[in-house]
Length: 109
Length: 115
Image 1: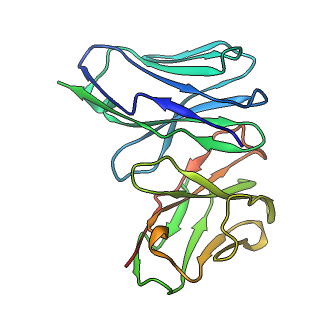
Image 2: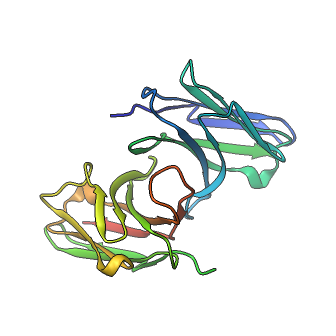
């Protein structure tokens, strides 16, 4: 099956700085790469996604980049705010659906 | 638009007992998923339904877990008998389209504690 690795597992940044989270995968047939944000005790919510025919996608302060050759994709959050503090999960889909192990992001005011 | 509903929100049982969870997806959503999320880990897909048929249950421990989707709408997930390692949050999700490459909408989850 798919092997999804997510790094780092924890990340602390000062408010206003940028945060980057990276995921790697193994199955070259994977074609859809969403990112979910999960606040403590709440449900995961999609924040951005990218398909395999696109290299980069941006939505305000959030962007995702995909390198299909190297089989990795990254979440970029700019101008971080305290409300960005949460656990972020990448996911990889093709014939199956796999979540990464999660990154706990803390934005320090 | 109403979201994905799940019940109960919390359940505490003893090992070897049985438990059932219920999920009502967003109206019109063809695909329904059940996930197990152990504390500190990402959700793990247990089973995926397309309408009322099973698409993928490769990670469902079939010796103790079962699931059904009644008339292609509501779904129940059952554990019988429960083990300590089943303690987790069970998340239900639905998506409008068939397949994995579409946004999934998650319910609030059922937190199961097995003692």
